[in-house]
Image (cartoon, rainbow, N blue to C red):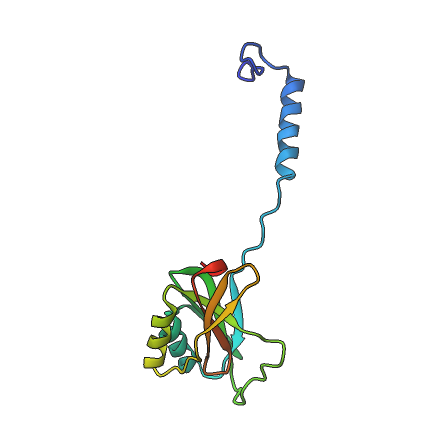
Length: 166
């Protein structure tokens, strides 16, 4: 027990003191704050895998990170080096009618350095981005953005990296 010295480093601790320290360290470790959840992906249902993969590659540089084929559906995970977040495309085999996006879905969002250049690039690629808008915030900040739709009608907001989106 000579390796267990008191705070001054001069006197060995008793076995009881060592056990007490070990128990207290274990209690402290158990009280550690839990790790917060990390957002990892969002899923959308699409009709045509090839068409959707091509759109997200052209529009946002997303590549297929993984593809898992099941009997009745296929999962395609898209990502890029910019973010660890993935977009999961689900193709339900045999589905031919467009999905009803309902009134609960809003949009996905991405951010870019140069909104004007990105808008022009997407327009040149034939992807029909909507007009650039500015939304002034009460705190004096402003968001510059435009929307674009994917082949299944999902809206994607493209924001300039500024204000709270920097």
